[in-house]
Image (cartoon, rainbow, N blue to C red; front, side):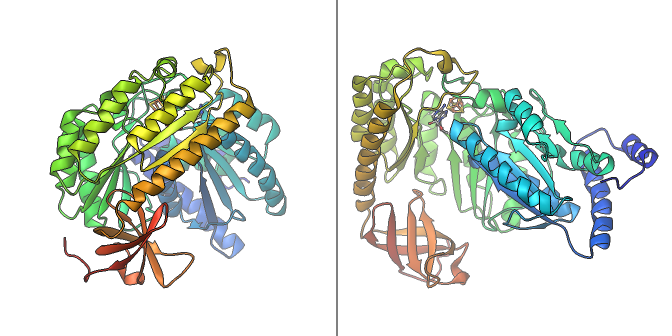
Length: 481
Ligand code: 5AD
Ligand code: SF4
């Protein structure tokens, strides 16, 4: 696929600005010219599909990637029979990798029918050299590979691919650079994630994130606030501040939270994720005193056993976690505490597992994500002895899931009959006479309503608690809060 002569390409490269984001806007323009000429040739628009695996960070990155593709001229689509297909991958557990390989096999068939199709891979999985080697060897229909540190360079890599028709790979080991002001396309009009920091320095022994996302880098307060002001001007009412560990934000997280909550037009602020080792009293106070900050703290426990927590390098113990959860519940009325728990960490005994169940019973998590330990090459835990046999892990997983489900349901029941604010997020996909929204504490509520409510905060009576969600009715007109 050669669209540009070598000397013209060299001229374009020679004139490219050195600084970011100007350089990328330059390549976006160059790609747009190429895409226009392909459109003319084909007599139709080109389509692009971005599929996102994994966490909120990846979802946010995909909004940026989508913004770049749209600016280049692609029409976004949900289906993979597109001219450009990008997988933004996750590697936190092995299962995520297996899924990507499976789907790459399917894409090969699509590409056989549409040889001009461009297939690209990016995200956490690509930061693993073994994965890139496998893709290059066994999935040669993948045309562009990049990592987590250079997502902003999509247009530059696409430009090179268009010119040379050769597969492009650029994965960086790390970066100290944070590129601001790239285009982005939000999935929701009224809510948006906002990165406040990238990377992680904690090196929990089971976790691959510090290896694939690099060291912590915090964005300047003013850059974050400018983005939030811009979002508010665009009609966003809820922002979610994103970081692997927001409490280690370098420039005073509670202060940032307060400032974001005070941006005119912002009605709700959320954040994720909090590491228990650095959640401060000041943060609890700031949340308590500012009703715009949501009554929800996601506080990954991982294990309830102090012995396992030490092996995990979590830097808190069972008592410390319980004391913190207690302080949060007492300090912030109506707060929901949610968590992540891993079962089957190497060497976990039945007694260790009982400690986990004990913490679940004592903290009474409003909801919990439960995971089976997955061995990640390169992490410290991968070489630990006593990997727990699968049947034992499965049994513990089922017992844990049963308990968190039961307690989650009881927690949900507590609010039945109360009247609370709901931010309506969309039409209920199962019943168009209903809309679906969330409470400040992140619980889901379904209520009768139509499209006009989407993006509005309404006062809702929670008529019926249904395990993990509520059925409610609006008690007033759209609130002006
Ligand atoms: N195995 C299982 N779960 C993991 N997590 C992170 N690494 C692993 C692993 N190797 C879970 C943790 C973390 C969440 C995002 O994913 O619970 O909080
Ligand atoms: Fe992984 Fe621990 Fe960092 Fe979370 S805090 S991303 S679990 S290393």
